[in-house]
Image (cartoon, rainbow, N blue to C red; front, side, top):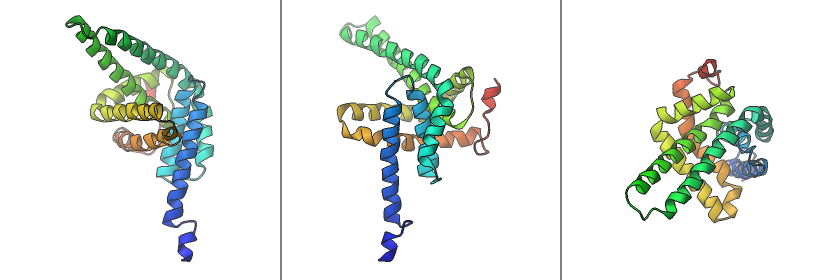
Length: 212
């Protein structure tokens, strides 16, 4: 019976993980409120989720804020550029949607918008995990994120589906917003970390793309 209440017992370890998921999700929500800092918050969330929850390293919360502060300089302009592209495509999609009943060019335009949305979301899905792991200039980050999104198309497709599904759930219902962000980062990490291992065999070494 005493083992049940031991700090290392299975039950308490999972309770601790659930608490970490909720706290990290809350940190991400608060740090993303200015919108322009959402990229840095996403990088921090991914880094803390992988190291603190999956690898069970100490200092999960401190790691989140340390990564958040460190990546602000690069993440803010990246979030502005790709966020603006995303907003423009969503606006274009609404315009196309109002005229979708017409055949021919409108359907072709809709297909182009969907393809571009996939490319933008796919690039963003890789961008901030990459930033959380490696040091990049603004140019190097964008270039490497695009390369990863195209080199790992099946994973990119799943990451986009996961991202869009998470956003839909959080917009549709309020409560999931308190645990979905970190859960999405954890699920995405199984695809992203596998790709990282293919390109960077040694743990956490500097990205060779940075030299480009």
